[in-house]
Length: 237
Image 1 (cartoon, rainbow, N blue to C red):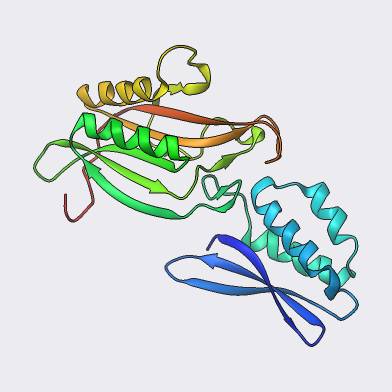
Image 2 (cartoon, rainbow, N blue to C red):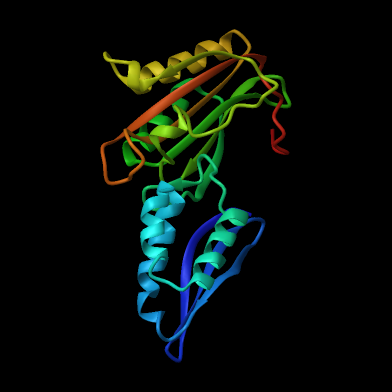
């Protein structure tokens, strides 16, 4: 289960660090305990661990961990190795990306309006075309609390395309210099649908380096695959 954030519990001059995990149910997993000599640095460690989830800055984490006993360092490292492997699309610059609402849209104008409104509000958007039970194409749209943060080293998208689908083309707003980027993104996705091809549109916040406090740009990417539009698995389709 992915880790959403790190938190601390304090008691009698000591503290314990926990990770809040997100799966079918939320759960707390113990990370390490801090004795009375180190409890005063609890906030520093929790803050750095939460930054690590987003930025994966090993040097910054090492600088904080070096202030703690070896047992604490080993416990934290072991937990991060087991529970905190990088996962695209999970974290924004504000913390964990949380789903807000999922909808199906079968009107192209409404689809464009939904994407435009969410983008202007800074919400995360994922949308892909599907074939409903009546045989018509529609858009499955997932809104989330924020755009995922993508570090420079993580490439140009916030999701991993399936290995069994050949990528035919990719359009990105970063390379688009003229006109309304929402219009162009939606038009490319709709054109793929008209050809019976699977398309996937999503937004994310891209950094020019590995840090959230550097220069970031909100981007839209449309991936079009050399594959037929999949059938919806939604029970209401």
